[in-house]
Image (cartoon, rainbow, N blue to C red):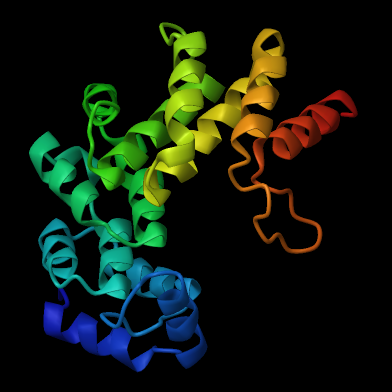
Length: 225
């Protein structure tokens, strides 16, 4: 028997964690959340499996935990371009946006059409999705991409871009430097010039998102395999 929206919200509320709530709020989630651990959200999703109707209802609550759960129980193939576009623009917390991009946007049958539209968009969350898809193409299927033009755009725009867009623009910059030796020197120079994420706090053992460090570290690892 399918669970109702009310029943699922009650489950999520019972799984709330104060530390997770505080962490999410620190990074911009606001108060419309319960602070559920991601592992617990996955467990709830495993019980529900696929339920598009419930997923849409969960998304519309605006609750962070409900939206994360919605992403896990929706079928990307059943989403119209218009519906997905609206979801992308309303995902105004980075973790929700990144799950949406990873689990739904990247698996949508019309993602290339949407990528091209979002790459021209001024909405920072739509642009984040566009650059995220472009980053995927840089690493997996770069045919048809004008990489020097992308570097031009990154050089002129990343320093002043809004935070949601800036994050995935930086992924593209690093990706070009990592995967294309002929453009590596320029990618590193752009990273040094802009200084974006130069002082980003990084846990011990993790690689900095500062593009010159990121590029050089990944190249080193690939050369020592």
